[in-house]
Image (cartoon, rainbow, N blue to C red; front, side, top):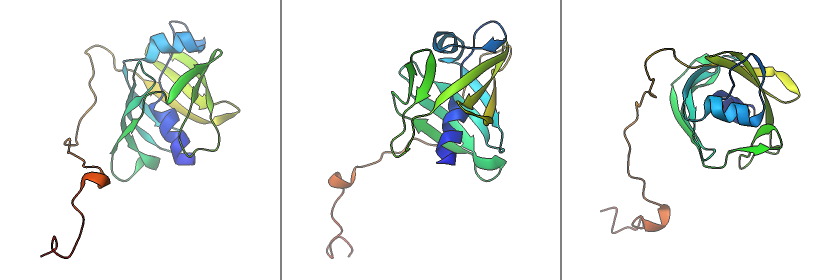
Length: 156
């Protein structure tokens, strides 16, 4: 569960023009479509982009070690509830909402509401447009229902 929340906080991004707490609309304008690098309280880091449909794509390295992994969360993962940005992840017993605090024109801090120690700092690159690094080849994945059955004749 902690990894799912860290991933979500890690890939979340938002903030307006002045320092201070942002509401959902300010966060949407500051974050959606932009790439942010992030560093979290327990060492998790990476890059991510929040899509207009509430999906998230990017990379993550848990606790600052091990492989850098591609991560994608489906459309509708992030959504607005009142003035808050919240998340909905299958298998997560809670649906966390986030406190989003703008630091400056390029960065903000995001934390799980009620758990301010669980925070990540997000920074948007200055100057040139920044693109997510793509280290993974796209591969065709065939659903199990369409794969040939593993029978004795297929194993010969």
